[in-house]
Length: 283
Ligand code: GLU
Image 1 (cartoon, rainbow, N blue to C red):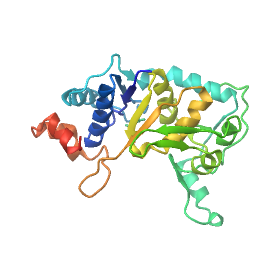
Image 2: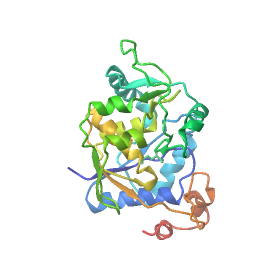
Image 3: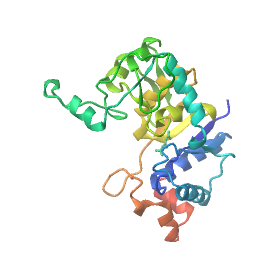
């Protein structure tokens, strides 16, 4: 199978050095193995995505010397595919609607009788299953927030889930059911006004683009646990994962979208070159 990878930014702010590293690394790997490099615009969150940021992404990546396959996949155009997958999971009784606010969840997990620090998973606090119930699947797929019933989901899967990490810490990462229940839990797969959550859309998009190797930051390592479960539930292949180091600022803090000082556009305006950016990120 041809090595196929992607860079999947969200157009919610300027690309910074961390994005440049991720994109260049994936692009170089594709080039080195005579493979394919896709750009995917992850604009599922329409409240935060802006066309001007999308334009800036194309502009910055071209300036960095990257080229990608046409057409560019945009999540905002894939909502029917996401709904179809949700409907399949719904019919199998694996989803349930949830009305809890972040505050409700925080309150539920910090109840005094629980003791200890509230457990965090790939998506924030591990959901205390407040709304979990057996849904009436004769009803159509509801709108709004839907959670995956992790227990019901895993009950139908063999306890042999894993993925192959090919990054700096290469090896097979085993995902035992017990760990998925305690450290991941009932994650959100559909959000208000968004159709699908990031986790569901990224899994469906990687499969639709035949991605063989996902190259992305170490910050998404535990999100991969969710992605592997979804791949198994939906009968999709699990790509190899390369979770790379994160680019940090001088104080050792991970770069965020709001760190405009590290924006590629700022370096460009200062007259730096694409080669300078490669040097700055250690490539
Ligand atoms: N859209 C995500 C981000 O900008 C990246 C998702 C991924 O690479 O899987 O952080």
